[in-house]
Image (tube, rainbow, N blue to C red):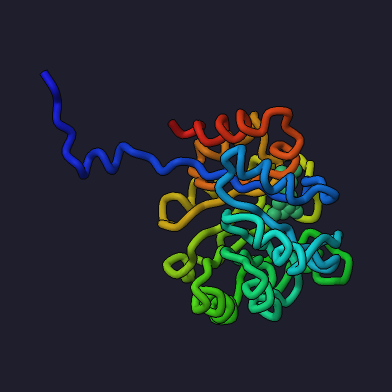
Length: 249
Ligand code: DX5
Ligand code: ZN
């Protein structure tokens, strides 16, 4: 006898497929166009551009010019992860360069904890944020038809719940930002679990994602896995993406 599953129940059973975001921080910049093609051919869903200013994080990386360079050669959505002070000043230029998702750090909108207030003190962490200030930047992004994600460092709590209903996504950092190839901080998974219960947008995780840690992140409720070293270091990028995408089936 065939059992008919009502459409509503089907919707509850079916899970959203996991998305993979290739962070170009570990791409070979001598051959960036080939590396972008590699991500596309492997089935990556988006590209992640890590923007670092040497002040918000202890490292300097790349900016709008790279987004502008790769925009004409890919159809994949491009996310700019802004690990910079005063992100609001740069939203327009990243969007003009071709960014689809602008990810801003919560630590730029609140009073920093004592230990990280000074120049050169990391990681930046906050306990509260000025919701109105952050909302201004979120709307600046969304009014241009782009998506806004809020990012939190491992030590920062989910301190922006009044913004849950307007954000397109939340990115949980699973390493202290600044460098690729760091060890996954598993204690952040409790934030993913907590968020999953109340937040309807995308939940993304970034830092130390690999074959061992990705299943834990997916089990906790993550929708998007950001990976730099695991993806670009893979001998078989197609299999790597297939493996990651299959984690919630
Ligand atoms: C860290 C960056 C990450 C980084 C991830 O500051 O925000 O996106 O590229 O690198 P892996 O995947 O090697 O941990
Ligand atoms: Zn990142």
